[in-house]
Amino acid sequence: QVQLVESGGGLVQAGGSLRLSCAASGSISSSHSMGWYRQGPGKSREFVASSLSDGNTNYISSVKGRFTISRDTAKNTVYLQMNSLKPEDTAVYFCNARRWYSAGYRDYWGQGTQVTVSS
Image 1 (cartoon, rainbow, N blue to C red):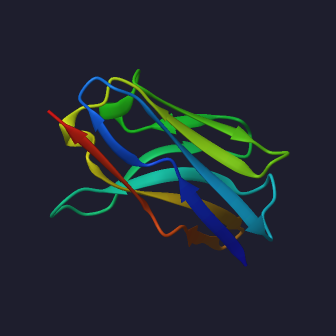
Image 2 (cartoon, helix red, strand yellow; image 1 turned 180 degrees about the horizontal axis):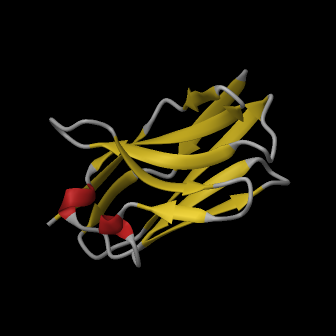
């Protein structure tokens, strides 16, 4: 099992910055990919960014150039630095850890942290 605890959400004005943190514990290893998803009001959960076990990162197009994902494997923590925030970034942000198997994968989720961007 993997446990994930997010922190760092809050209320910020448009153009501001926030940094989210996600601390992982349990059976987490560098072979897990880790990332962030978000769910805005009345919307489905969507992928935001991921940090893969090979060091590569991926981003949804709407956050490229504004958000940066990073990972401290020694601390089992993943971060999401969010700059130039927009009201449309308002959502509950969820940390994700994914363990890959030959036949598929298993996801683990945090409880979510609210990010609200005011205009």
